Length: 212
Image (tube, rainbow, N blue to C red; front, side):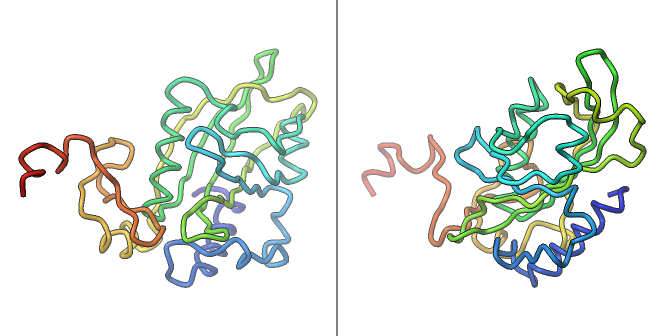
């Protein structure tokens, strides 16, 4: 986390979660991060392929020169970048990690600018992560930024940051199956709805088990 905006929002989110896997949406007080609100976002998950912008700060909108609210976050990416981000978001739901990405954004005329982004998991009304508090910031904005829409994003790095140094203890207690997806390697699977487990095809559903 190199940008001041990223560090501020991460520090506040970590304080608000109070040791939980994630804070609730209504635990977040905008006044506490007033200085960076123009660079903050909130995503809402509709399904595994759709993470809509419910909020995009004014500076983000100005720099991207387009309205992001209501758009699918994953639609800003293509190919392997889109798949990587989708798997990372799913991992956050299960293990409480924080996703930090750096990326280049390109205009139709080929200009590019570097950004840092962060996505932090939130609970909304259920005990499952389906909101993400985020920030997108540019450390050295060029003079032309905002004069052309940013249409194509290319990821230069991504990493999961564990606030407690590893996947949340709740995830470790409830999980009983090693992660098979490389995007979540090193952690264990858990869904935060009570008494919900991952079912793996080819597991204990064969005829030998049916006889027991």
